[in-house]
Structures are given as structure tokens and as C-alpha cells.
Image (cartoon, rainbow, N blue to C red; front, side):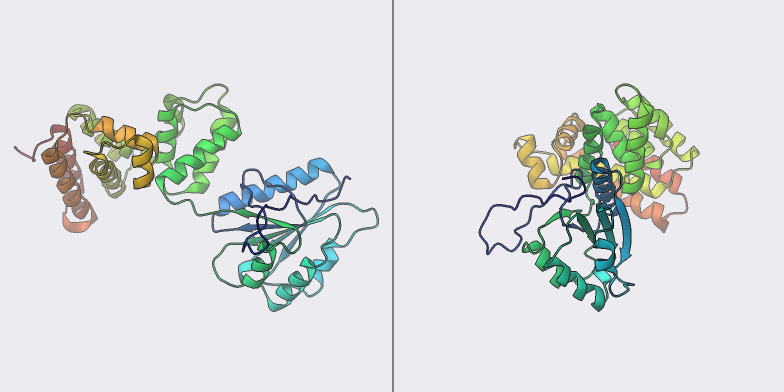
Length: 349
């Protein structure tokens, strides 16, 4: 029936299971009387919320959308905005700030779980920043109210960001070359919001496959991209190209600190992979990396040995200290680091 929020199927398992409700991907949430969007990653939470709204609106364009703040709650609001209207339009109620909810909201929300309103979808956003509202979350997860949970875990590791970006293109059925994807993720290593926006811009603007050249044209000015270009050419032993890349990055306004950090990161990955005979998948899982990162590190190790790699890592540690204030000439520190890596020999040897 149009306008009625559908209940997601209950997860199989015993009644004693702590979390008996379905957990859905934030990329593909489904409507239910209660939808708990939990976890700190705001980009994913916003995407899940928008997807649910669009889903319900596609089912019935007369959808009524209301926003409620759990931390500044007016008594009686929840029942008011979920109650059927004269014409029976479906309702979507978006509740923010559940992690800092008032006592009044908590009490009314717990009562609401016992008698959800027909045709209403109540979306509860809890960032996990506090244990406030735990009683409500426990009740939802135990199955009271017929809800679902959409976890939005923090995206912190490089492998998590890579998965996030890859998922953006897979969802859009858009092909992106592996090198292009790696370059894009490197360009926005510190800001998931910007990475998400960049993915969507490429999906919208580029008619065909997305290549490394396309990513470079759009985002080549990003510091992190320049950093990995410097690192890649130096590690490959292309001394002249590495110095040119370094000077181009510095001329474009790159900060020496993230440049050194990017180079050091690649060297550390090489050191962790060096000497292992494990398959890429098993080694990646053990080290918290992606398969492609292990494969790339193994290719990068061509021509390196334990001594040269150790020398390079020591040089990176010295450069890191110098660009953070231990030297008055951070540019010279960077050039010396690139020289050590590209020549695979101590500076001046």
C-alpha cells in the first residue's frame, strides 16, 4: 500500500541475540518503522538519509518530511509529526542529535517503539559520540519497534578510503582505472567529504571511463597527488623526474610536511611487505592493507635491498624532523631525501 513504510525482515537468530534487527549498508538502506543511523561518519549518514528520503518520495510524492532535534525537544512533538494526517500521506521524521537527547525525548521515543504509527518512518541519527540514549538504542536493536540499523563506521585507513571511493563508482556503474582511483584517493586523503564530492563530480562530468589523465587534469594541483608523484618517481630510481616533480609540487604551494609524510608512508609499506612470501590477499588482511597496495609495494621493491631500504627510511625520519622545525631549510631536506631514495645511496656517497 502506497504511503506505508515497509518493515524490513527480521534477522534470523535466537531471541537472546543482543542485536536482532537487520544491519543494512548505508549505500542501500531500506525503509522501516524505525531506522537507526549510527556511527560517526557523517558523509555516509547523510547519504543514507537522502537515499531513504528519495526512496519514500518515489513510492509516494506526497511524502511529508519533518525534522526534530532530540537535544532541544518539545514534549509531544514525536507523536504529533508521526500521526496520520487527514489525507493519510506517508511521513518521514528525521531526528538528529540522539546522542545528546533530552529526557523528554528519550521517554517519548521509548514509548513510541511500543506503538509505531502506520505510514511513518522515524529516522534516528546517533553519532556514537556519547552513551546518551543507550537505552533507546538497545531497545531498537533488540527488535522493539520493528526497526533496522544503518551503521556508518569511521573511514580512517587508506584501505577504507579506497573502498569508499571504489564504491562510489561501482554504485554509479562507472569504470575508473586502478591508477586513477589510487591517485584520486591520494589527492583527498584527509577529507572524506571532499573525496565524495570529487567522485561525484567525475561521475557527473566525464562521459566515458575515468583515467589517470582525467584525474590529474581535474585534481593535479592537490598536494597529496604531487606528493605521491614525487614518491613514485624517486622510488623507481628516476632521479631527474623525481627532482622535477618535487620542484613542481613546491612551486604549486605544496607543504613540505605532507610531502615527506607521503614518501615515508610508501617506504614503510615497502618495509612491511619486504621478504614476505604470503599471498597478496592474506598479507593484506594481516597488515590492514588492500591487495593492490601489497602488489604495488612488491613492484616498488624491485632493485631495493635491506640496506638501501633501511637507509631510505632513516633519511625519511631525518627529513620529517627537519621539515617540522629541526632545520631552517626544509626544501634542502626534501631534496636530500629524494636524492637518497632515487640513488639508493647515502647522501653525498
